[in-house]
Length: 193
Image 1 (cartoon, rainbow, N blue to C red):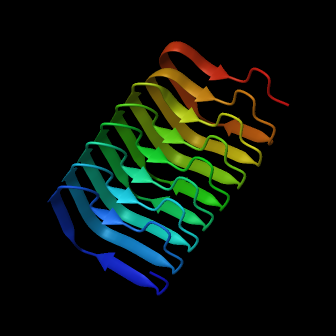
Image 2 (cartoon, rainbow, N blue to C red; image 1 turned 180 degrees about the vertical axis):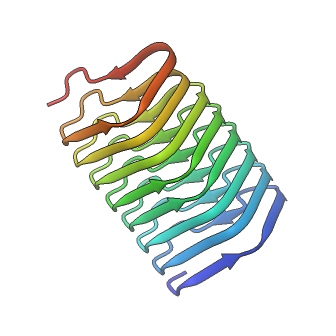
């Protein structure tokens, strides 16, 4: 799709694939005040999207794969006031993205892999006033990022690794945050330039 669109005040459940598939979309789109649950793949799939997109006050629960898949996207993504929980894979995956990603006032918990992935991303990203808890791997996976990353007022608990900045070359900041109850390492910054 190339036009702008919106989904609001809607419940999507029991999908046999993705609940919302916006792959390669170039228009601006928003999902607001909605619930997505029990999908057999991703909750929202927006990989390779070039248009700007927003999730605002959305609950995504019980996905077989990822809650939000924005892999390889180059549009700006905004996730706010959103809960992603009980995912078979990562909660939010924005790996290899080049747009500006902002995640604010949200919760990611009970994921089968990472909480939030931004690995290999070249665009700037911010995670702010957000809770990430009970994830199987890294709370925030920022492996080999190449641009600015900011974690501000974020609580990361009950993970294997709290935050992974291994091999990153972009500047990054963690401030006013809590990282605790990690089974391996709280913060990994090996080989960071």
